[in-house]
Structures are given as C-alpha cells and as structure tokens.
Image: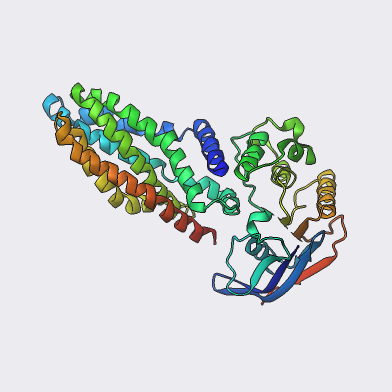
Length: 220
Length: 199
C-alpha cells in the first residue's frame, strides 16, 4: 500500500504544479459562457437544457485531460520501474486514475453546478446535480484512464482517445442527466442514482484491469 | 545466491536478437556486457528487469532460502531518467523510496554530490546531473541486482569515480551487477559477456 500512497501523493503534487485542471476549467467555462450567447435570450429554453450542457462540459473537459494520465510516466520511464515491484500493476494504475479524479474531475464536478447558474438553472436542482456529478465524475476518470492507457505510446493520440472513450461515456451521460433532472422528489431520482452508482462501481473494477493490460502491451 | 540464465533468447519486432544465451552471476560479481550497437545489450538488460518477455529459457535467482523474484530485487537504470522535472531532487528520490518501500534519500543524494542542489527542481539540472539523479536511486534503495545500461555516458570524471566506488562497495556487500558499457569501468569485472550483432 505504501506504493499506492506514494503515487497519489506525488501525482497530487504534480497536478498542482502542472495545471491540467486549468485547461479543463477553461474549457468548461468557455462552453457555459458561450452557450447562452449562441442560443439567444430564451430563459425557459436555457434552464431546460442547462443540466445537459453542464454534463457535456464536464465530460468533454475530462476527456481533454485523459492523455495526461499516463503519457509522462510512460515517456520518462517511470512506468517501467513501476512494474518492478511486488505491488500489482493494476493497483498502481488505479492509484493514478484516482489521482486524476482528485486533481481534475472532482474539482470540475464541484465547480460545474455553480457555473450552471449562468444557464438560468433552477436553484432547487443544484444539490441533486452536485451529487450526480461527483458520483459520475469518478466513473469518467476511470474511463479516461482506459483511454489514456490505450494511447500512452502514441503521438497525437487524442483523436483515438475520443473514439475509444466516447461510447463508454454514453451510459454515464444518460443516467447522470436522468439523475440530475428527474424531478425534485428523491424517490423518482433514486433509480437513476442507483444505476449511476452501479456504473461507477463497474468502471472501478474494469478500468484498472483494462488500463494495466494496455500499458503492459506498450511496455513490452 | 546467484543469478542463473539458461537458454534465454530475445525477439524484438519479429527479429531474433540473440538466442541460447547462458550465464551466471554470483554474489559479489560484476558481469560486463559488451557488444556493438544493436547487438542486444539493452534488450538483455530489459529482459532481466522483466520489462521484455523471454520467448524461451529461464532466468532466476538460485540457492536462495526462499523464492525471490528477479525484477523485484533489481535496479534498472536505463536511458530514460524516470524523474519528474517539476519536482525537486529530494522529492524525486523520496518518491521512489516511498514507492519501493524503504530507502535512505540523504545517502543517495550524497553518493553523487547532489546534496547541495537537493531542493532545486529537476528541470534546472544539466543532462549529466539528471543522469546522476537516476543513479542516486542505487544508493538510496537497497536491491541485490543492479542492471546498468551505459551508466558512464554523460558523467564527468569525478562522478564516474563515485559510480565506481558505489559499485565496489555494492560488490563487497555481496551484491551483483550487470553493466552494459563501451568504456572500461574503474573496477575489474570478473566476467565478460560479448553479444554479437546479427547481420
């Protein structure tokens, strides 16, 4: 476990220094500011599509940073050394995906609902969106790790990341939005929340296995 | 305890690089790898480190009290530095020490005269200093087998001397090392292995 702790501590420190979060926030902000300008002054329409726009922003912003998860460690040889321990490689990969969640996806998920106020979102909806986004963002990071791993050894892998990851993002998007907008009564939102939770747990299991397999194929 | 390689062969990208290679390394022994560029020195080191797969043969520690895996007890220092330029030297070494369990960071820094610049960011280092920072892992974290890929490239005379001292004390303490090199190391290697480039 000391290996896992060491990776998380290092990646949090690197994340704070290198500012991948800045790019992602800039993207999210640009989207949320530009949408009302492009749609015109229809407040009712805006508040109806607001949750969808926020989810799209979150999803694409996370996608934008997925390449960073493994690329540097792959290029500077750190990943090589990380295979030379008794710690299972899957656990190491999971630690890196978790760090990505803490440094990028979680701050985005926390920040997006307040930004949604610019889209005339119904304030009563905000807590629900918050919970759904924080839950969903974990799944997004886990899936982003798969994309990052599959393209770690490629120059200009971003196109491929989108192709690989977008289909996997669809369920998160559908149930995330369903959970965010299914009325304000908790009992109607519950089924969607449970499915979102299930998706998140599935990605927690699948992502380390898939990412580790992809990275090992590159390292050989 | 000794490292025994039996009949190992290496294939990269469908091309056979070497085959039926046999050697043993005893405790306190240094095996010097020689051979032209492309003869497979780096491939062999990566293979021992578990980074490439052998398609045949076996590679293991023998005469050990319990089974010990080779790659978990090796240091591999290749051409990639495996250090982060945004972190300080001390943070880089501390990370590897924490990642691999234990280690003495101050000893590692001192072994290659890096103590004075330990709190500078690694991006400020010259390429030789970066290489010294990678080599400092050897002194920081104790592992039995050292796999060094052209360790003296880019080092000044003083640092080469330090590396030789480090290798000497490692051998005296019963360690093993396999070193790929084109120049003469300061210490006399008992064993040589020359890989022939295939046409």
